[in-house]
Length: 95
Image 1: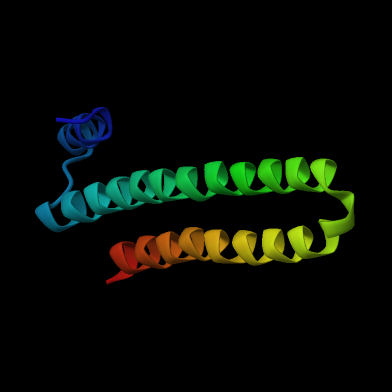
Image 2: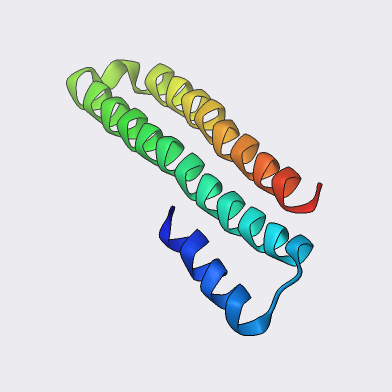
């Protein structure tokens, strides 16, 4: 049992949540945790992309334009993963 689930159980004992409210509270905790995990990957990915692009531009300054274009495309695709994670979070929270 996770810490968040245990905290919700303690709160349910003190406030006397109905089973439906208990389920919604656990769903909110799980959705928030899932989005937090979903945001870690794109953050690391964007850092790697930018770092490698800067390294490529430093090694070959004449191809900086092409490296920069490719970097921005990579950032856009990587950021799409974070947006997909956010949409899943919203779906878990409200559906």
